[in-house]
Image (cartoon, rainbow, N blue to C red; front, top):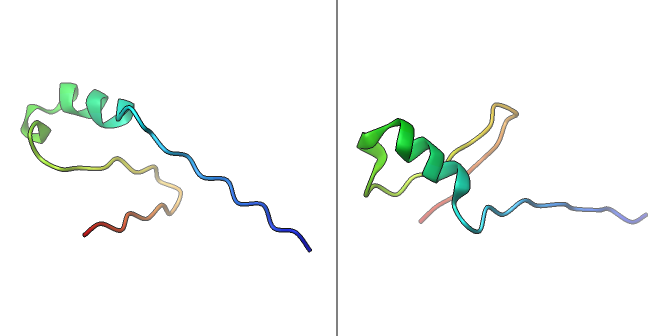
Length: 44
């Protein structure tokens, strides 16, 4: 059985850039944007 894994990488930070325009407090702060479908971010 072959399992297909598809990942999406936002290489130009489009979604974070949009959120930083909406919320000035996010500027200069490391952040990520998640959907509401049970997404997960792991950062170190």
